[in-house]
Image 1: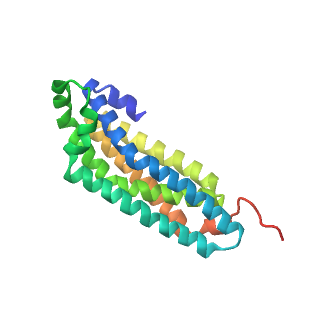
Image 2: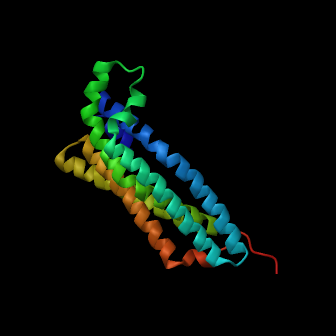
Image 3: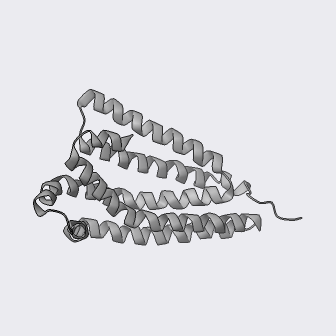
Length: 199
């Protein structure tokens, strides 16, 4: 829905968004792998009755994702032209120059939320690995729907803009992180099991 709204703003807006999300994937995809690994280990530890090891796994994963995502955010903040240069190959220079004023603010937003995004992936991995999958599904649907509704409401009141929808994306990611972090801290996941151990 968000990409459809951005696409209506024009070709350059869509191109800047696509390029920014392409850079975002560089940090997000490795975190997905980490989240899957966390889910597997958390499930194994809980099946063995070792909640302490499950928590330790999550803590270590949060450390890894923080180091990785902060490094990526620093590169986006300190050397945005270097990060963008990989995508400039094969693109007509005049078109790329037109896109730069739209693109750089988007990279700043990614630099801010990518750390929260990494944490969110780790918490989701832990909760899913424990078997709390219904919560993940329902929370994702509710938070995502709320983000889109807020964006559409603001757009109807004040008009469409690229930054509006990127603030919605940042708010959505932050809200997801807050919801899953809260679920993790409350500890309901520690009582769930994907596979019961043999007596």
